[in-house]
Length: 147
Ligand SMILES: [Zn+2]
Ligand SMILES: [Zn+2]
Image (cartoon, rainbow, N blue to C red):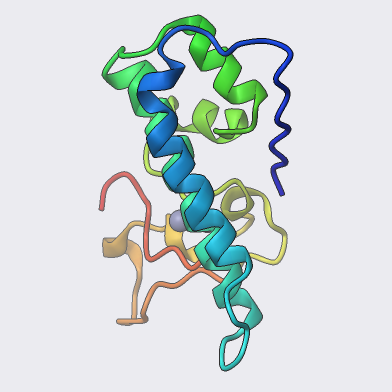
C-alpha cells in the first residue's frame, strides 16, 4: 500500500494548490474503501475498490502531466515522491499496447492464466467463449488497448 507521509517542512511546488482538492478527494475515497464494511463482500472485491482508486489517481496525475501538460515537471516529481501516483504503472501507460493497463499485477502475476498476462489483457475478440472478463487481482473488465 502506498503510504502518504505528510511533511510540512517543505512547501509543495507551485500548482499543487490547484489540484490538492482533487487529490484530497481521491485520498478520502481511498480511506472509505479501506474502511468499508467487509460483511457480505469477498476479500478480492474490497481490494478491487482500492486498486481502482489508486488507478484513477495515478491516471489523473499521468494525464495532467503527459496529456494535458498542465503541471510542471517539478510538481509531477513531487506527486510521485509523495505517492499520489504509481510511477511504474505510468511507465507502462507510456508504452504501446499498455495504454490502459489496470495494474502491474496483471502483467506480472504467475497466478494469471495467460502466460503471465491476465485475462483482462486479452483483446475481447481473442476471447473464445463468451466468458465474462473479470480479473482476480483488481477486478478489471478488460484493458487491452484494442478494446
Ligand atoms: Zn486489466
Ligand atoms: Zn489489473
